[in-house]
Image (cartoon, rainbow over all chains, first blue to last red; front, side, top):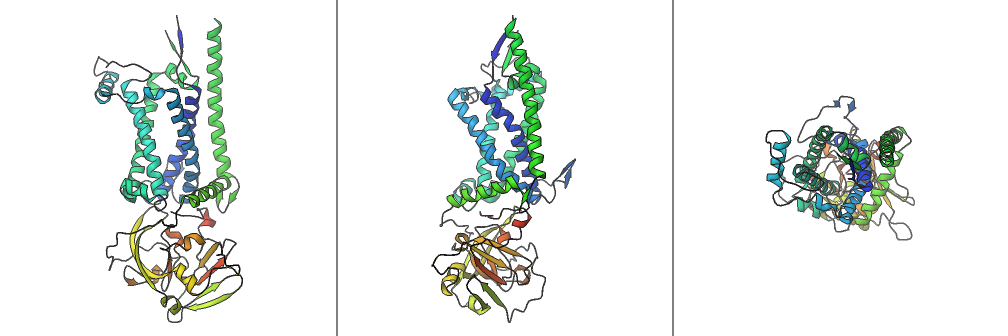
Length: 206
Length: 246
């Protein structure tokens, strides 16, 4: 007997998929801005088919328009988490670090025993998704601080100055890129049933 | 079983919707990128600039400041970035600045600026490229310059909305909103880092406006314009944000 279970609410799926073009645009335009001054990593003028050089104005124009859409999408997602109570699925419990570590060992088939868990997400997912939320908030706050360092000077002071804020923004972006990379691998490994849940909303259990 | 067929249909429709969503997203991106431009920026993104300007003009306070640490920067030369408008030879001995508004035009010698109270201050000076450095600078506060020579106001006593500045050869030019020009850190500068301005930093007189990106701090002021129509702006014509406020 196959059991069909609703997994991801429509609102959650909408905001998830909206993130794909919006976040892509933000990262791409951010790299165009970064090209003009490269304090951490030196990037090439062209990255495969992507021309990165001398596009600062274009990068800024996209970055500072799309940011509104991405923030609005983020707020929709947060409101959904709050009102549905689904934030409970994401907020880490006390033993999240050892549990996530043990789950990763289990997932990599190094260990045979999985830590006990319940809910939508395993401990590694819980930690990864929660971190992604924190990184997004960090990217928005540090982004605002370097975007308007005089008008929002309190944010700059809070973060420890222009250079620090710029580094935090860069760090959050790079960590989110790493998250997306691991996320794609894990989605591919988890298979169709899991992927379909994010598209059509339901999963099946035999 | 009926429910299973329904779920299959739901999956097919959802997948098709997702694929069309990606397709439409790509089309919208191409359309915006390749479509109509306003001042060098794709039209919808130009509207984004305008929206942002409204938001930040609402949120800014007259007391906002970009203060430096105040430590001495004597002997350190300010970073030079850009030489547009500085190519023509300049006669510093007989230098004068043309001040133009719809009702009058005056020629002010350099002494007219140096006669005003000298303000010395420091700031974090930020480039639109992403770097910044601390500078100290000295000169006449722009707001005091206006009141001392009764400039910048219309016959009805209200300020003009915009100030335009140009190099003597007219090759580089900016325009700035009056509120930012009246900011207390906006200075008509003749000294940087406790030394007279060098030629490549805009001698004999330049603007330093720390509430804007460095592109607005025009070097070697040849002309000051007051107007309610926004005067031309070099980088805003190239797709950069005209407001460029920090």
